[in-house]
Image 1 (spheres, rainbow, N blue to C red):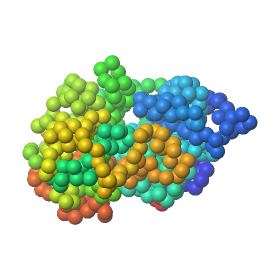
Image 2: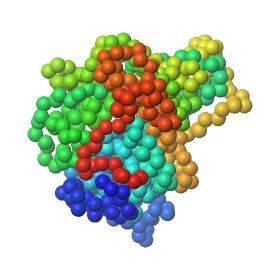
Image 3: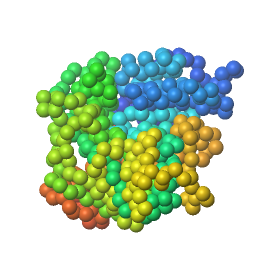
Length: 454
């Protein structure tokens, strides 16, 4: 796709290979501003891109605000789009670019699989829409940087769906660590997040109404299997995130929550680690087949594959070493000179216990305080300020996840662990590993290429 100008998204899809997918399915809803129906100056009009479990959760939450209206939804599954639109009194489309072409829509929620985030975020920024982008922010490190550039160039307000940034206990714990309550941080222990599997699921008939080719989008087409897209009695999550073509495994599903807290507490929102390495046996790619692994592919957290996943270590400026080692799934245990503070989702503890009881007085470091993640984004749309989990924050947290996967993949191709990969966090390249740089991005198929000009 070439660089689109305003109002060109539909023309592009009609002229290009996506023409068939661009046909709208509209459910009349009267969303345009008129007498008695306030427009964008009075309300924030939102479109939802992706109406799976997370997309619908966000849209239901945002529709509860008096100054918000969900005007349209888009999903490559027409039945899902129509059902969501009917429940929200909104318009339904198969192609998200119909939403971007609407002048009445101010902002979009992007809750599609990770391999679609970059293209949709860049297009939304170019179309002048503010963005709520679910984590994991990106599918590759290069994609994430281009997403940040697009948001900054077009002056958009983007909130990443790392809602723990707006948690009271997470904020308090990070404030304590940043202000020296445990002294110099020497070590951080976080979860042993699993890397993605290779899709070996058997092919099944594509359900009516699902445009599977467009669902695959930038990724090379994979055989359809219901485990990739459906929530069943056996599983709470759709399995696409466990597959390398579409997601980054548990590393990029739950990893962004925990590693975002690690990044925040270490003051690395605009930087990153200096080096990364693995220890143990080299990584071995797992081909997921239901007859081999009885768990659903989206149940990586409860699947025992420890022997196939070497442990990951990161070293940050100042010497703090982050170890992926224990069951701390949404945060980290920060070990310092004077004690330990453990920050997890909605949970804060310390050793000794008194470390977290005494409030900070005149703290040297003041972190961004958000008391509600959705409201923070809506407020910033009005003020044009950056929200608590703005694009750079989301990109840096995602980068930690990608670096973890890359370290394992490098160990697989070299057959070695223990090699310290030197990471230049500003240039966002490895200085001593061509294989590491090879995994900074991945091929995308036409016509889903990233724009040549952001």
